[in-house]
Length: 130
Image (cartoon, one colour):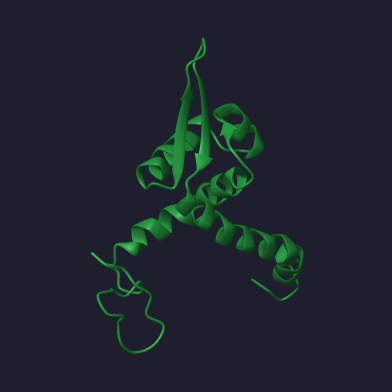
């Protein structure tokens, strides 16, 4: 099934509307833009990481949540799991080309958030705001 983005009237040929609740892109969007999803993909952008290094890089993520997200991203073809035949086995995770493309876009979002977070929090804390 083709998936598309419809910003104005009309749907792209063979595509569906991501604003439609039944669009399959919604599931992918949910996984990519979750708090942990964004951070995992962005952390892997600079190269492969072992599980515990990745966990330590992303403060506050539990091993269970990291495992679940890595499994999902592997199933979606965004992350590759590589097992080295050592004793004990060494497992690392890296982005696939499609995962790297998604991570590049998400890193832009993270940069914007980092740049603007303080001003947004200050605005929210202004007197008279609920």
